[in-house]
Image 1 (cartoon, rainbow, N blue to C red):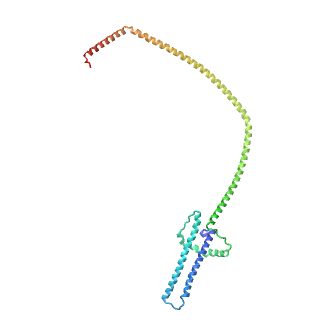
Image 2: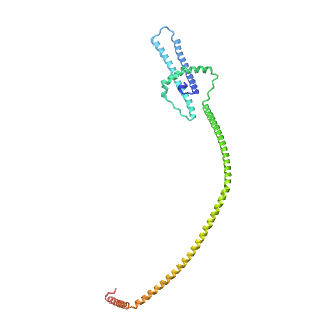
Image 3: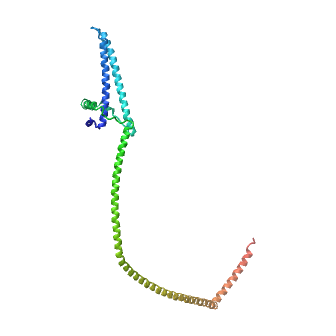
Length: 301
């Protein structure tokens, strides 16, 4: 059964218990049916001959009684299966599981034959062992709490094991960290000793380099001061030259102005200038006379 249906030992025992319960109900119902036949024999079959109608009446009555017993057994079996499914679904819902069933598998002939074979072989042997060890059989855990407690205990055990592993891992890491810290301390000490040895030599080299840099800076400062003095003298000379050039420019402008005045005076004293001036005077007189004449002929507004 375990190899064919994939059940663990606990679930296999549950199946055996249910099949034992179903078989006891079947045996009880078969005894009831047998009693129906025995009652018919004892109550009706007391005469040697019966008519056809009497036989038919007895068979119809027996059929009704047997049909009622079988129908009651089938209904009770269906209701019992519903109660069994209710227990399974209630346990599953406590863990937020949603079970599903395939109704078509209930008519799978191959599986039904496997169940029948199990009932003939494994179930019978398990039933014998169970009857011999009935007093020593442990009770099943309650449906409402047993599954939860068992899973919680397993989870607590697993977490404790993981915690122990983590603690061991932490101790190992702490040991490695302490070893690494010791190695680093030794390395730092060796580095400081090396730096101290090299420090004196570096200090001498740095002092010499600083002296050379100071000399270079002093030389650059002297060059800068000399350049600054030369630039000051050059700037002073340029300013003096600029002043002289301005004075020269003013003198030339003054001479140019005097020359223009002299030239204008000489031009006015020439005969051409006097003739042009007389012509312009006459033209102006003629223009004035023409304007006066025009005013005479123009109507007053």
